[in-house]
Amino acid sequence: MEKACGLHCTKINNIGVKIGNEVILKDVSIHIHCGELTVIIGRNGAGKSTLLKAILGEIEHTGDITFMDKRDNVTKKIKIGFVPQSINVEKHMPTTVYDLFASCITHIPVFLRKDKKICEEIKEHLKIFGADKLIDKSIGDLSGGELQRVLIAIATKPTPNLLILDEPVSGIDRNGIKEFYNIISKLKSEYDMSIILVSHDLDLAKKYADKVILLDKEVIKEGRPEEVFRSLEFKNRFGELV
Image (cartoon, rainbow, N blue to C red):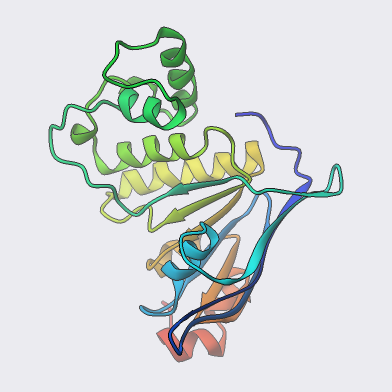
């Protein structure tokens, strides 16, 4: 990945979603700063998954998402990387990390023999995430933490303007969670990447987020973790966070 210049910002502007007469999201506006981890929290049914789908263009919505390159002072089409909460993987499936990665970045059928140049390119990118030794390993044999590293590597090639992570550490052990957030720290500091993470784990949000968004169909509260978690809006929905 190329290092980012740090002169960019992503703005989610007045996103609204209705299904029939039911309002799922109402005028959600968020400024995503480069080099920061923005964590979105909220109770079940608050609209977190719907917001991600709207940003990814998977559902109809009002409002828009803009990406401003301040270096050239122009608005550009945003490039988004996405890591889902889970992928359907059968144990011992024959598909390797190389097969999965190559199928995402090339049009070459993966059943053909391995392309040496592409293999080296993939291996170099996996190395950023400490996953280069996994290149020939079957997807079904990866641990939860290993799979997340591979999925983040795929989501960041080419380098996105915005990286979206949906409950990325569910099912991962404590060591895997620590490794995951080390990777996020690296993406923030070395690549100045804008990152949105949706999480049900309030303790992790409090520990690692630079900014927290409390969502309940609309933005109820936003700010630094300690500011949001001490707010009346948070306590009305979650009670006291120890």
